[in-house]
Length: 142
Image 1 (cartoon, one colour):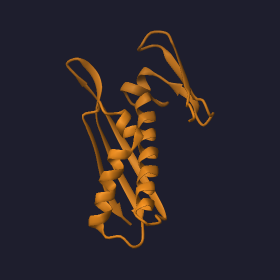
Image 2 (image 1 turned 90 degrees about the horizontal axis):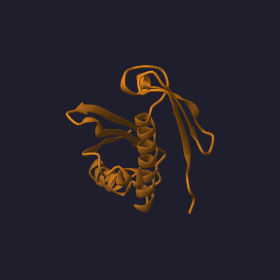
Image 3 (image 1 turned 45 degrees about the vertical axis):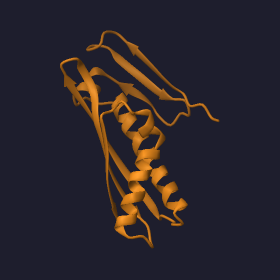
Image 4 (image 1 turned 90 degrees about the vertical axis):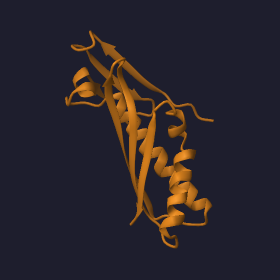
């Protein structure tokens, strides 16, 4: 099975420092900072990368589950929103909200919603993020 890698380097203190991240496959190579993570500064942050991983994994899983049900989705699009909140013990990812749309012929909404939930449970990234208290998905046929 393949092994995936990413690299990150942080230089300096937490608030004044700067970081650089790179995916092993070269698809992303860019900067991150305290400001891009905990404020609204430019650059990416680990939580955006988690959101991308969640959205990508879920879209593939939903497509797979629809295929196993004998359906051929024309497309599946998912947006994941990762909530980073500060509590008494510091920052944590408290929830991930996914919104998904799929164009699939030959299925009613009730059956589609069953497959949506099955895909959420089967998604490898959702499983890896089991420590996140609340991962939800709202999906509609288009």
